[in-house]
Image (cartoon, rainbow, N blue to C red; front, side, top):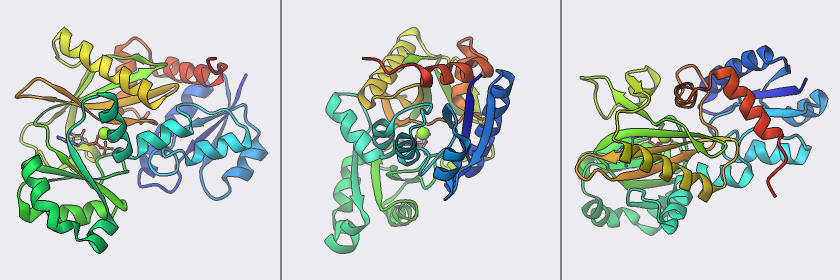
Length: 314
Ligand SMILES: Nc1ncnc2c1ncn2[C@@H]1O[C@H](COP(=O)(O)OP(=O)(O)O)[C@@H](O)[C@H]1O
Ligand SMILES: [Mg+2]
């Protein structure tokens, strides 16, 4: 029997999603016969970890702190093994600007982009350069904070007039934002367990929904998920192979999810981002993909624990 501390909640904007992931993981761990301690992460995290002295921490946190390498760093310091990716992979995945530079450098296709910090606008007059960017990327331009999840702060700006407002919105989430080329096409995700790609999931907006309203799409559940996605064998293989390349590039461990777009006009695939700590709720994509790949939630949870306790590869 393993004593597992499930880290959940926290102060991030994705606290509620994390509480749901955490509760589901706790149930699964109990069914698997583990000794489970739930920890709602706060300023007493280090002392609670020391008191609980778990054999393993199951990181079921999303968003800032949980996904950006902070909690992983603390777990390293306290000496508790933990599930999922290590500090370095988390840091690189969490910052979309850094992640996109790494992907571009490695030849993994990702939509063209320009990134700015708040000071570029406040102190260097970056606003003057917006028309050039808009011309290069063409409308609609996607504006998003460098860090965040669950589509928070992401806007599609249809016209020049909409860009400043979209930037202000994105800057309310992060000091760094990116303007990205909009890829008109299908929204795909490839989850991986131990580097093995699972069946592709497609997120299909319900007919009649405002295409631009992500918050509604993702939080109110106005999206239908199809798994395995209805793709040609070629597209499926390419999506899975790109996902694996991204996994290797970022140095992920345990499990992760890679978000992609398939452009309608060209059939090309682009990687948007890698989620180092993907959601594990009953509506999350990774558990759905695992199910389609023949792993039910308990088996998935067991596998994640096993991978975290396995000795690091030489
Ligand atoms: N460049 C883009 N072109 C088209 N749609 C995009 C683009 N970037 C983001 N989106 C849409 O927004 C969603 C969330 O974007 P993503 O970059 O994955 O950020 P998050 O961390 O919020 O998941 C995507 O799944 C996709 O539907
Ligand atoms: Mg995403």
